[in-house]
Image (cartoon, rainbow, N blue to C red; front, side, top):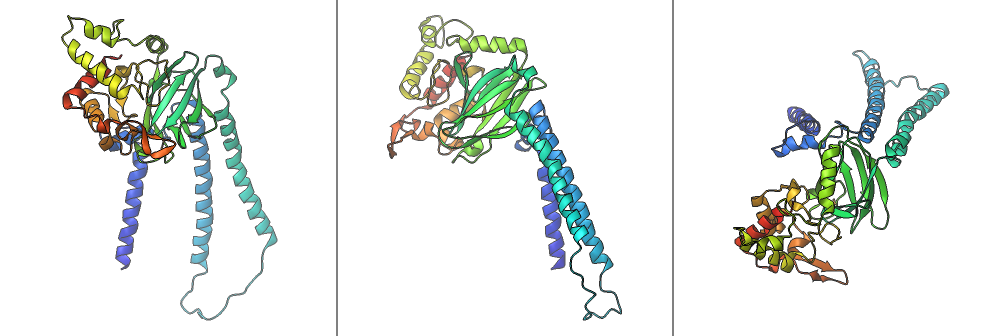
Length: 382
Ligand code: CUA
């Protein structure tokens, strides 16, 4: 029985160690466990995250100090005043009542330790809520809206929308206005800043800045329904040159295949071998997708804006790589990828939750060839 208990404790310690080590594993991507390293708050890559990691270490230091001193005093007393051979187990040791100096000292020490945690915490709250003057001058602004289960990113200074992939220049502050389109979500970009809730009816604020170029992984951190766990996003910190290039592209009308053509114009180009397929795809798009999606970045839609979709690295809100087979699967069976999503079931009517306001793909009857054509068309939008 005793041995079984020890076994359980060993198993618990082992599993805890495994879980904790995965939090900081700097894996190159690939397996699910490797990817966990992309979301380590203990590997801060910007001033806000660094400040918050610092507060974590201060708090950890205080709690470890408390654990060692209180636990040590307890263990010492148990050992020192243990029952020795020859002691009378029925004898009661001399009793005392209170010790004002010790009690007062402990109260003051506890309060002092709380102050040690509180001072950097308040400093962190102030930092997170206001962009420092040095960073404010060239900061950019993004309106973030959380929906079940994707992210809308609007760049109000430039007048366009995109979804699920936030792009910004490295070394410059990004002001984030956080809102919710339906239920409460939480914006979490572990390497750049901690969690902030997106709450219907109000706007929360935070800012981020990346030290180094790269792709940072984000995640909704507040349970928001069936596919909460699949509500991811990417934040790409890019060079000033790449940022301007990206901006120009987002602000232009839909550019297909690098040319100044709309998909329809391209499809009419008789020299194009896939012209018929693209025409078919644009028709399907208008028929089945256009009520919730747009390929014009200036338009706010109820589903993710798909302008320049071919330039994104992921699909289904960061859940899958943006490549043709995955996209085909996402179009054909979104309900298997993300349970409960509206693309499959249709958008519910607020007045009558049992009815749908906009039809989903469930009843669209798309064939494999249709899905392939749609995927090819969407990947032309770069
Ligand atoms: Cu959105 Cu969880």
